Structures are given as structure tokens and as C-alpha cells.
Amino acid sequence: MEFSNKEKGLIASLGVTLLVFGWYFYGSFTNLRLSAEPPGLVEFIILIVLIAVLESIIQVFVSFKNNSQLADERDKLIEKVSYRYSYWVLSACIWFYMGHILLNTWFDHLPILTTPGGVFHLLLLFFVLAEVTHFLTQLYYYRKGF
Amino acid sequence: MSQQTLAEKVGVTRQTIIAIEKDRYSPSLEVAFKISNEFGIPLEAVFNYN
Image (cartoon, helix red, strand yellow):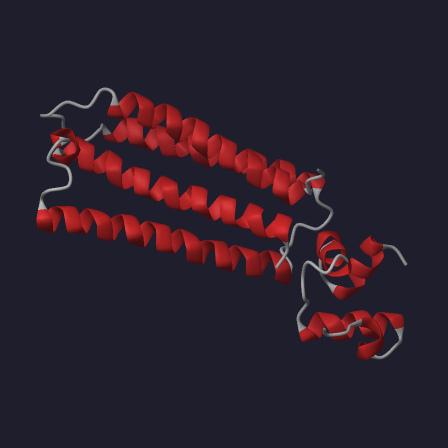
């Protein structure tokens, strides 16, 4: 199974996202306390900067490998479709949490998720799920065809 | 003509040309006309619709 440079870049980006955020969420959700405050701004900025730097390195590597750095119509179409699916995932997650706020029943057995720290990490998880959907959708259409 | 040469002349990537050849992507009309013009043959001779 041969992958194009674009697909390799997507797989690398997906791997980096899952590794970095997986490590972060594992540490965060296992250390949440009932009275926890949201995480420090410094730790959050470090996380985002780390992700941005790693993604930039991957994009530079992919651009170096590719002869053409410009996305053509197929790339733009696949990216547009993947953004649509990731928007749906993010919307579903937000609606789910809004339902929880209104009904106040789904997380009764997990009060930790109702603390400011829990809410912050849950919302961040929703964004990460949308980003993972974005990568997976692109990979799917690059492999399957469009 | 190589795939890379055709891709450069038409304004797409080589991977897109490969996807078109493998019937995994239907190009836009603009790209389809550019491809047929590069080969100097009518559009219907290059593409068909099943």
C-alpha cells in the first residue's frame, strides 16, 4: 500500500495530534479534582505552541517532498468536505453538552466533569475530536477516491 | 508525455492525474478541457460517462 506525500503528511499530523493530546488528556483527566480550577494559561499555551510547531515541521517536510506546494482542485475539494464533517462532529459534541447543561442528568455519576477544569478539558476534547475527524476524512477520500 | 508534465501543463498535481486515470476522481470541466486540449483531441475521446 503506497501513500502519497500528502497522505504521509496527514498520517503524521494525525499521529502527532493523537500522541500529544492523548498524553495531555490522560494526565489531565486522571488528575482532575472536584474543586479543580481550569488549567493554567501557561500550560495550555505550551501545549498549543507544541502542536503548532510539530504541525509546521510536518508541513515543511511535506512541501519539501512535493514538487508543487499549491493545492489543486482535488485537494481543495477534499479539504472542504473534511471541514464539513469535522464541523458536524464539533456541533454534535456541543449540542450534547448543551443538552447536559439543560437536563443536568447525564454526568450525575461524573461530577468531576462539571467543574471548571472538567468543562475546559471536555470542550478541548471536542475540538480534538473534530480535528481528528478532519484528518481521517481527508485520508479516507484520498485513499477511496472522490 | 509523463504524468508530471501533464499535471504541470493542466495545473493540477501528479496525484490528481493518477486519480483521474484510476477513475477515482472526476475533474472539473475546466481541467477536463485542458487535458483534452493538451492531447489535441476532442473531450469525448478522452472522457466518457457511464
